[in-house]
Length: 416
Image 1 (cartoon, rainbow, N blue to C red):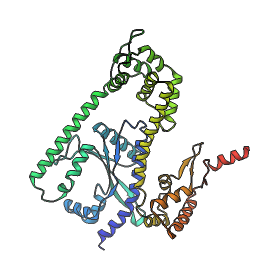
Image 2 (cartoon, rainbow, N blue to C red):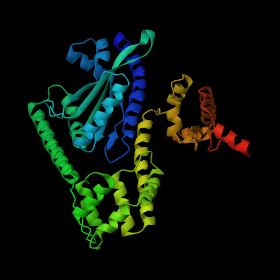
Image 3 (cartoon, rainbow, N blue to C red):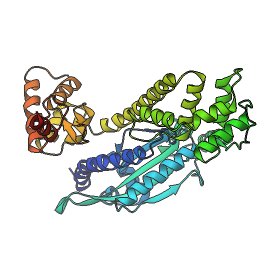
Image 4 (tube, rainbow, N blue to C red):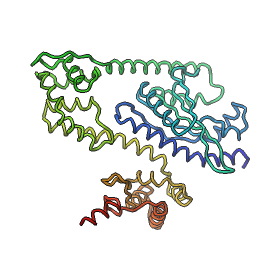
């Protein structure tokens, strides 16, 4: 094995810590948004650059292969796909801020404002990260690409062709033409989004007057202090249909502080964030069209659905930290590099005591790992023993089927 290949092997092992560290930072940044309608994103599985890619980069930049390992700007790569341009910029700002708070030097490239010659469009965030210790210490670059669904479609269609040498000019022209067409579609979609989201100004309705578009906008602003988006007004009118409702009736419901608190509490029973004005308004409309009970049930259901969406994304992110095979996980556990906290969370073994403290169910983790890797025979016994030992040595406390932490169990037993 030559020096470059040996260095690459060490870099590849160290890069795994960057995947875990940056992955958690990106996921946490999105969780702070609260409202999942603000930014819709999908994380692709992170990737570590293959040695052949490093060699190609060295040849292109006239670096030595060893230099290329630490100079390559995308040795570790993340790709984030958003619904639209506005989401791309929101996500990029969140990620950049989160990385800067870690003390990392972030370089931002906006290839949407200034596309590459090939037509490629995305926002890139790149930062050097020190990894390893003593003689194995090195600096590897991590790059986060954020793009729209249409930009991602172009990347998928064109990547292999554009990475080959001697690509015919005609093909490059056609790929650029495709990129420009999809960029125009992104612009049109953004115009539509802005049009339906523009604020609608209201007018105070006459006493006993009907529930019109201007009345809806007035009632919303009176309740929340801001003009509602146009789409909310139009969707409310569509929900009402031909029913003759009075504006002052909806206004009275909207000013019912007790009802609003009940609706928010029902929604927040599942989520970790507060309900936003558009949600609350929709539930109050439901209370007027149906009943208070149906409105509370709707808030409860939407809270559960919104949390399920975030949870699914979190599990997708956590899956990147779960080794693909049992021998790989076993090796990580034995050498002390396994991310036990993520494993407990991923396999449904991490819960919360009512006091807020995390509690861990060892048996859930063991069963989850056995099922996930389809272990049988001696492997089952080995996995059980190895996992329990690792968790105990890492100071995880087994809740042993209880839903309380040890302190709360002690308090309850003492009271009895």
